[in-house]
Image (cartoon, rainbow, N blue to C red; front, side, top):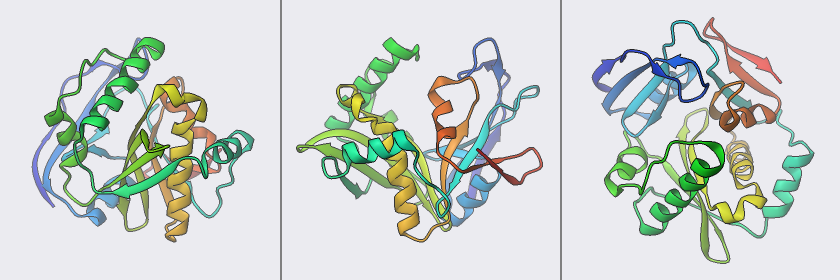
Length: 236
């Protein structure tokens, strides 16, 4: 691994919980193997592109890394409904990340909907260079999961394959198909594919109690969370 810089900026307003500040440590890497990134995942790091980050908040510990043991996972009733509604109707293609106009338009529609209905910041049109920096230019091979209905792109997810699991990086979808619960379906597909490959875990990123956009992850049970002691503990 070739690390370029490590920095912890001053605290700023939290993007997850109102009325709080957050502080993140960032590490920028020129190159990294999937095995090296797995060690970072186990220690609570996440990444976009070549930028790794981990919470370093002095007074808050609400960001908890969450993973699902693939051999123990059992979908609940609503998750089984999501599988039944989409299996056979939604086509999933796994390929190499790339910038395309259809993905940028989908990304913009998704974020505009989240801004209007969830209070997310107004991002404006996504710049192709910024999209490439976040999702396409990576320090090790990453998978792009494309979901289509009737040949139309309705969802895009990015997944990090590591030696002992799959890590869901980010997913966005067409708001017109929100009744399909595509976000839930994507997570179920990641868990199912990890199990099919014989991998023990699916990593879902941070769970934050009280943050509507992240609380859903706790519905995938059983799951484990990373404790302050640096160990993964059963929860849910």
